[in-house]
Amino acid sequence: MTAPILSKLSELRTLTRDWQRKEEVIGVVPTMGALHQGHLSLVEAAKSGCDRVIVTIFVNPKQFNNPEDLANYPRTELEDAQKLLPYKVDAIYVPDPDEIYPQGFSTTVTLGGLTDVMEGPFRPRHFEGVATVVAKLFLQTQADRAYFGEKDYQQLLVVRRMARDLDIPIEVIGCPTVREPSGLAMSSRNLRLSQEGLAIAAHKHAIMKRTAAKLSAGHDFAELAEQAKIDLIRAGFTEIEYFDLRCAETLEALTKASRPARLFVTAWADGVRLIDNIAVDPA
Ligand code: AMP
Image (cartoon, rainbow, N blue to C red; front, side):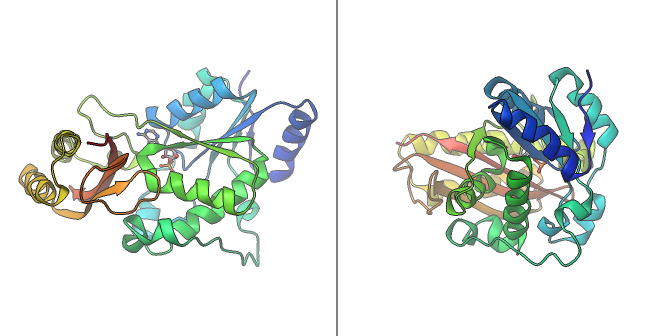
């Protein structure tokens, strides 16, 4: 049976009320569509951990700080529904914009701390947009568990913090990044890369892994970061927005891998902003 594609909150509520009455565990996978294997890995995790799975598809205008990025964002709903078929999800919620931001909508969820670094300064108001829409999706779906990718690691921590701070009774589960054979993290934005861009982007993961191995061997970050940035530019990246080593829990900047950490890199190749991070085992 194909999953119903719902655009109205009232339709979704009819389903979730029934599931809740039967005490079924509801999982949600929030996405902006243009589904790829990374998204589908979250669906798989949700299917194995929950009785019912809702995939949401909503290109959230409030989290784009660049109108061009929003206009260019791929919209492929019918293909997305096809891709979800084998997973037998219970609902695909593609809310009408009015269901998320009705006339007169005036509430914004803002977080401090975790949002002050990395993506925060580079994408003003981005996390406000994310936290606001995700809070709404959590409340609209009434899910018990939500699945997010470690690919957007800062977002994962922000969303988990938001749910805790607002007492939304949901468990936020992080899932590993799915990569192309080249190591490039799968992303809807990769669709915009030319063959040449893909070849450049493919270098990033190897450079990150090399740096992570040296960090785990006890080397200082400062020198490794300089070398890695040179390697990225040599590979063809045009701009490196940040290359950071941070505590995996608090995102505090580290000078050494003195505790469980993550290496975060955001750089531009072929006119596309590529974001990635990997775990760094403590030295
Ligand atoms: P998006 O549609 O880009 O907003 O992503 C929806 C969800 O899929 C987010 O939780 C992302 O972190 C996750 N995601 C995107 N790409 C990947 C990937 N390559 N591996 C795992 N999760 C991913």
